[in-house]
Image (cartoon, rainbow, N blue to C red; front, side):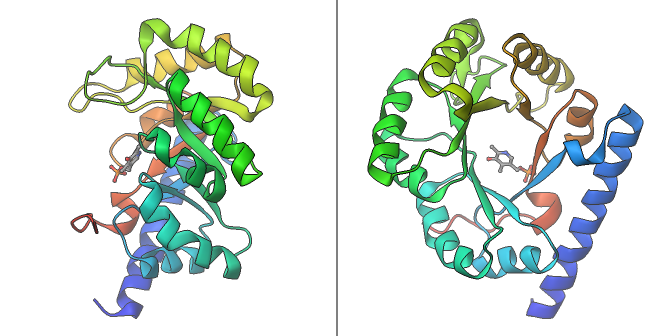
Length: 231
Ligand SMILES: *Cc1c(COP(=O)(O)O)cnc(C)c1O
């Protein structure tokens, strides 16, 4: 695909998503400014990220630290407003690098990772904002703190990291109605006085906005289907 066609495609997709977000907010009686779009650029080349930046998108999500580190530090020099969220399950040995490159880590889900993030933040000299990921469907293969343990883990995380804990994130099980999962996360966030809810992807972000999502993470609907991972 030529650069110009790719640029037009991504600008057009972004405009369409922003319009749908605005409509979902209106329907839910919410302010548009309360919902931020995280453009999930995993597996897409740096040129696609630049096309989105040229179209006014400044907030991005990546699920692998290594890939994020190969794309974003260079872009930040040219786009000082750029913000990066790490949204994928995080290995403890990647925590220090995540602290170095990310503005937010959306996948805090276990005490050993809290330890690594605390150490990594000391090493990096910066601590990103944090979301606790909740495994609302209690799926064994998925990251996220199990539902039963979530309240205790959130409290412990608040004690440890204070206001750096901004909120909660979830990925509902595939093929299930996501709304009960979004609602569960909303109630949990409310119980702990947390302002940020990261939920909703390409297929269901409007339903998430209806349940008070403040961050929606959209990949495919902006960048197209993902090429095979660049390992
Ligand atoms: C890939 C990914 C997304 C984006 O998914 P799409 O269906 O492409 O919009 C959102 N959240 C997480 C955690 C992801 O890994």
